[in-house]
Image (cartoon, rainbow, N blue to C red; front, side):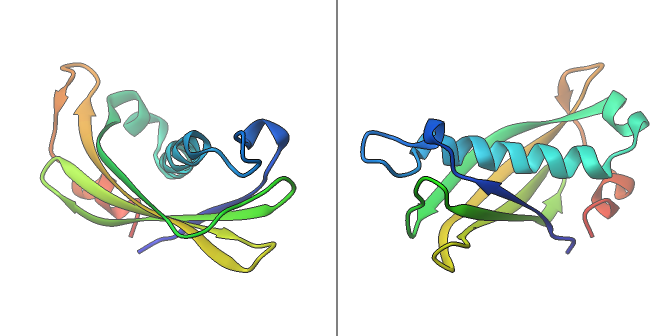
Length: 129
């Protein structure tokens, strides 16, 4: 399994009324890292033909992050079968050296021309191995 990661810094706009990262921001970061991983690995031909649709999303909150904290976001595709794949995400508060979020998302591959689910090709599955 190929892991993709990036580091971000928590800004004021990421905070809620309790001065820790807003839950909505975590959801956005999950979406952003999945998209960045897809765009990094997929060829123009694949991007022109396919896109992913989010089917299910879960987040387990294990800690918090605050203004100025450095967050390491890691993701990998855990499995692919038929038209769907399962992606895992972990977020670490590097400032506190602590796991703060785990997430699992289920994605469906769609054909851009038909707007219908399509089987994950071996070529696409190999992008994340």
